[in-house]
Length: 300
Image (cartoon, helix red, strand yellow):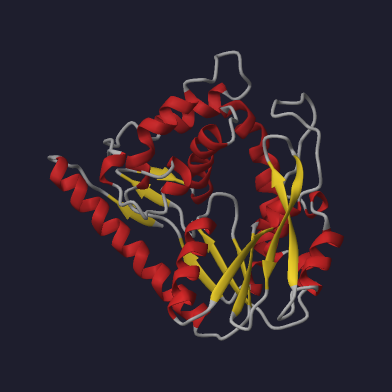
């Protein structure tokens, strides 16, 4: 377990801590990206559990592939969701498993993969999270220097990997370890939960109650389908950044304040919130523009 013990005397110390933390993560990501890019494959599978940092990893890979003259087309597995009519509200007594392979249109994905040959134009569906439905297609021309990157939680599922007949390189990103910060233990899954609570409130209009409602199903699916298959990805990287719980203190407090005392998740919310008591807040102003945390807090 990683341990962090720090008290900031002033704002300069906070800024220094942020920059050092960001540098450590950037070095890990640089090393992982280099290994993928130098593998000389035309297909990359990028996976990891929810809120692990897949978007930032994809951006890094794109940049590094571009440097050697390769063009990267990112294909999100989320765009292969089947249309669904469930509304973003807690449905009593019913769990919605958004991470199951059953929510994906595998026939459409297989069609896309088979058509991805040099000189072809592939049509990739576009899923709209607000309407919960497919909204047309986008087209991508496959050039000789093309690298296709299939990105998503489900990229390590056997039902997905079996569709790739050619060689691929897999990269898996995750918060890899529990951490104790100023004497308080944060489980690695709690760190991602904090990320998701804030992200889903900001970008998907999801209440904290709804995120907690989904979380049990999310975790069940991770244990059943993601972690047992993650070793298909030969490149793995830790996305934990040492400053992040200090940064998220005020953001998560705002989100969790929405949970009322009569909510079934109130006790869980208060327990999670109490873990931040011994942490000083760090301003988002100190975070670099290219930080992983723009995934969860938005562009600066």
